[in-house]
Image (cartoon, rainbow, N blue to C red; front, top):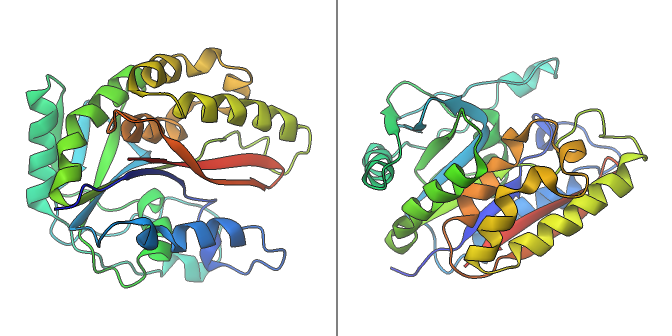
Length: 262
C-alpha cells in the first residue's frame, strides 16, 4: 500500500460546521477539512484519530464495531444533538494499535464501549460525509506528557504503511478566554510562529522542541491546559521527516494552524 501522511487538524468549536454561520467564521476551516481526502495518495483503509476530548490512564482505542456518538458539547441548538456519523469501527485496528504501543513499552488497551466524541465526529463529518471509512479513536494519556505522546506516535508509524490515515484532532491555540479577543491575536501569532518552526524541523529536533512547548513564547497563554495540543505530538511522532503547515487562518481573533507529516 502507498504510505499515508499524517495530519494535525483543527476541529473547530463544538458543532460549528453544522450551524448557521452568517459571518463565515468557520468557512475556511471547513474547506480545509473538506479537502483532506484530496490530499491523500489514495483512499485510506481506515482512520486512527487522536482526540483532545478523551483522557485515560495509559492510551486507549475504541474497539466497538459500531461506536455511538458522544455529544460532549453544551448549550448548542437542539438539532446539533441529532447529528449522525455512522462510520464503522475497526476492532482489528484498535487491537493492532494497542499492541504496537504495548510492544514499545507503553500502556495501552482497547475500550469496547467507548463512542466517538465531537473531536472525532464533527471534523470527520465534514471530511468524509459518507461515513464510509472505518474509524478508531485514540485517547490521550492522562499524564499529558508531550514526550510520551510523541513516543506513542512513533510506535504507531507502521500503520501508515498499512493504509491507515493517522490524524490528531485538536486546536493549535486553545484558550477559551482568548477567542474573540483581539488582545490575543499577537499572543496566538507568537506561539503559532514558534510552533510552525518547531514542526518544520526533522524528527529529533522537532521532538526536543515540542517536548518543551510550555516554555515557548506565549505557550501557556495559548494553552492553559494542553489537551488540545497533544494530538499534534502523536502525529508528529509518526514521521522522521520535517512537517509542513498546510492550514493557517485567523479565526475568532486567534491564529490557528494545521500540519502534515509525510
